[in-house]
Amino acid sequence: MERPYEKCLRSGAPGLSDAELLAVVLRTGSRGENVIELAKRLLYYSGEDGILGLHHFSVEQLVKIRGIGKVKAVQLLCILELARRLSKASASASVSFSTPASVAEYYMEDLRHESQEVMKLVMINSKGKLIGENEVSKGTVNASIITPREIFIEALQRQAVAVVAMHNHPSGDPTPSEEDILLTRRIQKAGHIIGVELLDHIIIGNNCYISLREEGILEKG
Image (cartoon, rainbow, N blue to C red):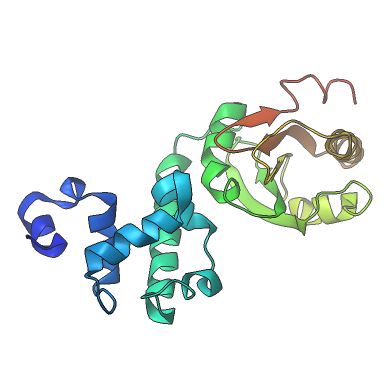
């Protein structure tokens, strides 16, 4: 049987299956199984999401799988992070911060795999270009915990004229909660006071999103 490495040299990486691509990264199998069999078993543990399920693994979880040591675990996580950054970098030139779908697509891979709620603030300059982003909180996105000062301090330092707030729902359902709506209105009012417009608050689910501006919630603030 042709090994994945030689197959890649002959026909290119697109010709390899998910298991074969993983096998090239893993390089060696474990006792009693070759590297292809190890790769297939790893994909099995990833569940119905297939190769996307690998995003949910931590080093600690990976090393519990027979045949995956710390070196292989780190290699896998670095490959996944590299893929995420490549995807994001290729999308950066076309992202439009006036279009919720464009923003959601740009940040989808950053947030949809998170097991906790993560809130980011995206900062935009007078030309509508991204000038930075800040992780405001991780764990619980709660209006009573997150203060306007936390939200806007870096935006003011970077002289942003507008911001987009975004966070994920680990359940995969982006439907806004009452806390999400309350937080959105607090951010909007604080932005009005200091002169930084809240363009939108986007909630990321599993390959889906909800824009609170599109829902009309910002206009009610």
